Image (cartoon, rainbow, N blue to C red; front, side, top):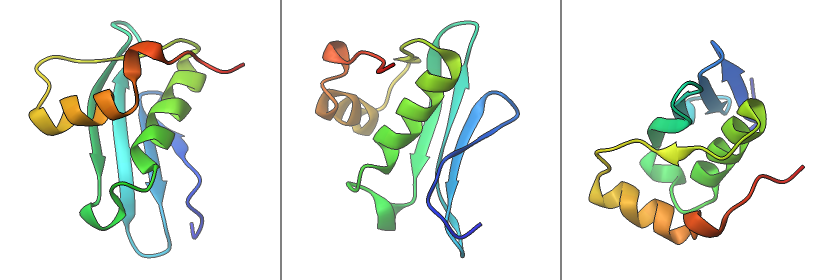
Length: 91
């Protein structure tokens, strides 16, 4: 795959690849409505990849997903930067 479009894997994971590597992925839980884990390759951070992963997962599930606890300081900063409490799913 040589595009940066997100794909859903196993109904609980979103992955973004480019030609050479995995750029990022997020694992989510439909039962608890949570993002369990999110990772973006350091070379691709601060470019919107994390937000794209979460938005793709939320569209797939059909509702807003909250970060699972415990959440790292880096994760807290990430969700704060998204103004997470103000977000809504776009139809």
